[in-house]
Length: 145
Length: 145
DNA sequence: TATTGTTATACTCTATAACTATA
DNA sequence: TATAGTTATAGAGTATAACAATA
Image (cartoon, rainbow over all chains, first blue to last red):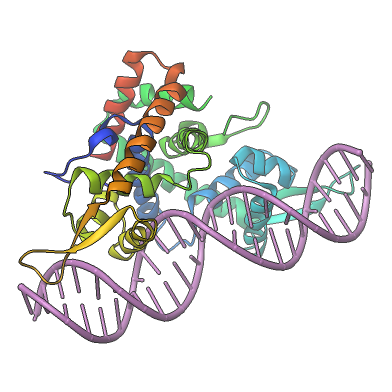
């Protein structure tokens, strides 16, 4: 959201947490624009990307990659499977584990959506110079490390 | 969440949206630590801070400040009123509007919690130099503008 | 007519805890 | 015993749409 003119923000002006939320709202809005009508959300696309880049990954590992609980990774997997984007295959050598794989449709959907989202991500950050964008990525990475 | 070693992240590595989410998870975790047992969340504290700094603000304006719908601002106000932190007073001159005000208890709670959260926000960003932190705030602000 | 607050409803995201199958 | 997946449940956050009161 944008700052409202004339409003007092007190300590919020100096909180990284609040600045992050404002920036993220802007990016989530941009994501929505880029994917309008595609029935997809940031965590769902993230899951598809992780599965696509790591074929055979387990649900638990997917949850770790996303920073959420196993049960949440399961619901994401359920969604992706219902949409026909992901298959649960038996894991060779461990009967407790599902190996997750993108289907053909999942690959196509992920590819198309990735392009749109990357493009929109760049567009939304056009306000920053290339150097500033790179520096922002670096600082965010350092903060989350 | 931290990056998982050995995992492939594909385009996520270059998306500001994903970097923001990872950084925000770190900060929200820090918020939780700073406020453990205090029954408070980031949007709720934000609402208290905005009301405290802008006495008599309307629910609609509060929603705009927070970047959420009127109905959401209403639920936050309900929560704050139930907790005894906020009063809805009649607005002089416009019978449709509530003027929101912190109670004594609300002021005390907000003051105490603000101090803790600001402190933790600084602690969590200790990984950054003072200059880097300032630069990060500037870039996030520019991105959200 | 337009705006404020309200209510009803629904969906996403996330967590915890307990259960089962397998290791 | 420990781990992967599952199920049940709950809460927070958010949105949209329709409504009443007031402007």
